[in-house]
Image (cartoon, rainbow, N blue to C red; front, side, top):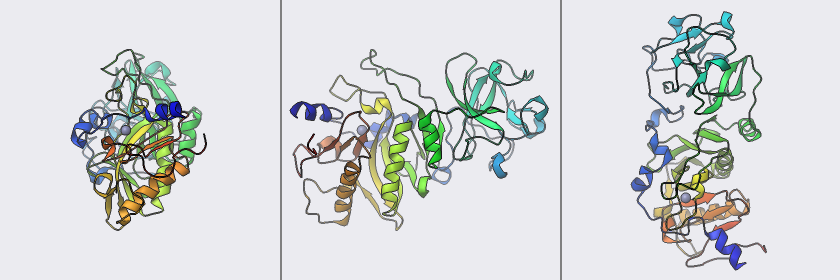
Length: 379
Ligand SMILES: [Zn+2]
């Protein structure tokens, strides 16, 4: 038991006490431009951002999605009024047309539209002379197209860049969708997300280790009406991580939405780094951990770990303290997460719940100083 306990404690058994700003500076989320709160439910951007044509407000048309940018329906190039825009027409094998652009490796993105991807022209169904090595396509987006991720007559299929430097799931004409089961299940439960790319990486402290994220996704705000934002409440709007993380966050949202939670504030998800003071990769390096900073409720109340957690007691003086304690224990009881570290675990967690999906673990951090019933259920 001692050995098991030591192993289970190892993820985050270090001094992580840092200010949110410092934490954010190395956070994967913060590598992307902040999304204003008024547009936080729209897909984020991963590359350059452009404003297609003269309109900034995409207009959804039935199942066809927003008009005027990469992936939108079109009859001619004039319908694709942005830098490099070309229409891959219906008579070229793209049902009802698809706006695209020539590309070598990356494509611009635009707020309100699915993230784009530069697909090798050899993976397109027709020889399209207007494209060079590659053509910009939409990634599958289960926020705009909840059922299939794509417009009708387009399938969600993995495609590669012209230089082979990456691949992800994009909307390709007249192909049956082919998604990993985890992503298909995520779509099936109505979670808004896009498949995304998180390349394997190596922590600077030890390049011999590899951060690998299984079935990476960008999960958007909006599941059961709950926003997901960075701790400040003004930036974020989506999280990047493993598909398994998105399922667990969705489980967590289902749990707290019943209590009136309308916003989940966090301090980060994927981040290729070691556990500070150790030689082990943090679960953040696998993309299956999230640091939860606090919760906003539909009556305007906002409870945070740093302000409202009541340390080392089960005799609570506030409703907030009791709710935070009971909620985190409920997650453990329901096995929503394999590791749950609370502010009772150590001072490094004073401002967040660290929750992750460490394989084989079943742990809720109540140690240091230990308080409360045994976190072990006989194992
Ligand atoms: Zn963490």
